[in-house]
Length: 347
Image 1: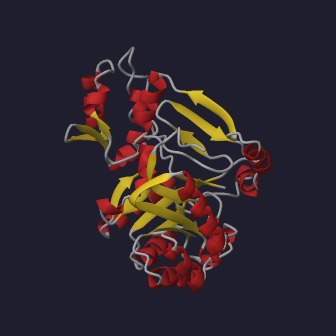
Image 2: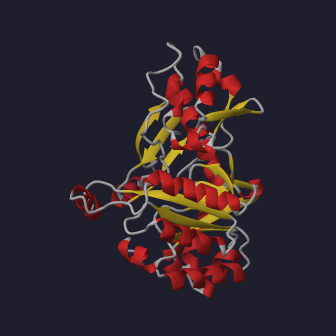
Image 3: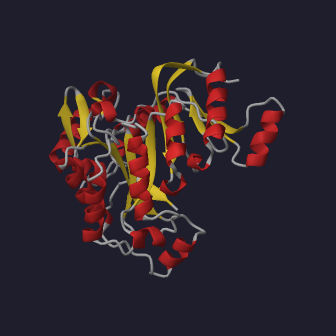
């Protein structure tokens, strides 16, 4: 169906929603269809997002036999009170059992999702969650800041002043980074930590490196290097269009050169790989801009790349705006107290 878009793939990510609700036979049917229509390289990274309460020993073993080799487990917290506040279906005991099942089934690449800046979760509570998570020695962590979408119960509580993070977002971010790095994890992207470079999320790196990717399913986004498109969000509209033999694309946009350059900066400055200095030479007064960013401890220069510091991560969504083709620098203030963390988990 889409072989004209991308030729081959080395990662497959089953996520968004809760695919662990599906049975092993349903996942098998899905994977057969994917492999029928698309070409994969040898040893692809195949990730399944899972909710701890959905798993059983038979189910996890079945997923492993299907070739899934990475699990992203939506733990969120090791505090039952926090899990109840977030209206999660699982408990801490469910998490413990799930991790035991995952390891017993032979998975050697486990990523744990955690959430900070949750009301009622103070510094000690968040640190305890981190310590308990580290005790399970997962290969990867994804740690997200909780934000609140409009038209939700939490949004109304926030408007009433009743939704206040138990620990300031900046403090939580720095505590997370410091604690995980002290325990041997590399902070390689704003919200991502791994035991070593081989354990970086191969799939997610494609987004940050601004390379082509293909999304299947309602609301899924795709990018071919020049054009971005996204599918219909309605399941009914999505399936109806497919049954008509058409691609279920809702909208698309062709990126002009300036857009692509800006996106590459935004994505690059999210990671410890940073941005190649050569790609910055197109901007005016780039040497002055870089000098100011280095003096402000927002970036360092490593192996011909501009790499964000830990402080730079706090301003990650702002760093690209210091570069301007026409004037050399946008009207940004490096001493601004506004934080630029965009590693969020929205509800």
